[in-house]
Image (cartoon, rainbow, N blue to C red; front, side, top):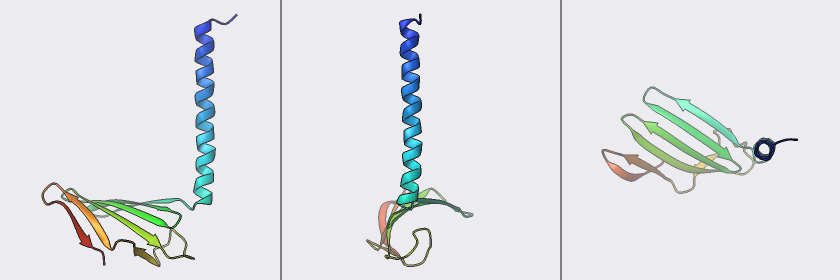
Length: 109
C-alpha cells in the first residue's frame, strides 16, 4: 500500500510532466504554423533580438551606453517573415529608453 502523501506527490509529478509535454508539442505547432522565428544580433556596441511572428516583427536592441530601442514592423504580404526584404515600419518611429536622455521617439529610416 502507498502512503497518501506519496500518492499525491506522484500524481502532481505526472500532471506536471503531462503539462510540459503538451506545452512543448503545442509550441512546435505554433512555430511551424505561424512562422515564428527568433534572431539574435551582436555588434561591438549593441545587442539585439528580433522576433518574427506571422506578419509582425518586434525588435529590441540594447546599445552602449545602456539605451534600449523597441521597434514594431509589419511585413508585406507574400514575403517570408525571416527575410529582411519588404519590411516596413507600421508607426515609422522607434521608442528609445535611456537613463541619460529619458524616453523619446525617433523616426525610422
